[in-house]
Length: 284
Image (tube, rainbow, N blue to C red; front, side, top):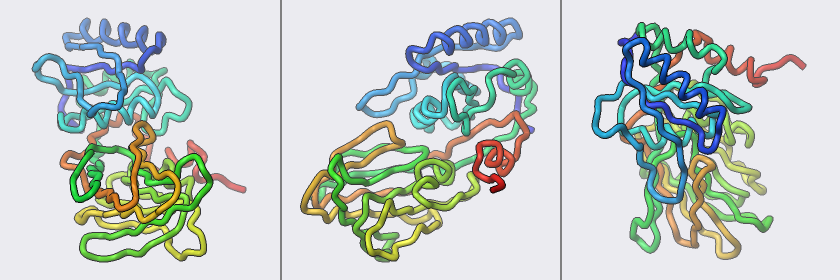
């Protein structure tokens, strides 16, 4: 049980008329019940992630109308607000968002305070080039250091705090939050991690002649990935939505983000039931 929410920011998937129409309907529904609602269209770009806000007014909750991709992008932008997000799924997967077909019931629960909060680790990252930090940002799901278009293995070194984890030749390496463990990390053979755990996941992508295994680490120390490849293209991907080129000698430092992701949940569905519903646990 949590406090009732009365002031909402509705973030709509860019260019989606269905999301825009539903947003207008939800805003009217909320305002008829004495709540405040502001609509914004979610836009992505190559600049820093910044939440659009609502002109300095108090804000209780962010509603995201779209799919998981929209939810991840909005969550990354709004981490610093320290308020809960609820996704209403208009996409295909809907692992992070809840069903939009019963939005009235979900919003009634928010207005009455009948929902739970899931607190989740976020990721902060820095790119160091020639001993100077040239880029930095946040991630919700994962950070991936991987090869470019050519099918060439890349060589990476890994440190965890003061300890050397090892080196590898592989297609890449994934650092995921527990929330992101069900995404690319799982597809690459990584572990499923309960989303509220304070942990980071390391998963190699197609390692060659290497015993570097997926590993789950406490989130109290940073992970440093060193690019040692002398040939071919290497890139850093942030939540699968932003990409940055890397050069030999570059270092990508990943640590727990300064702000946790807060997710409101109204469905009452357990984590394992959600996994089963999405096909993660099936009988053969």
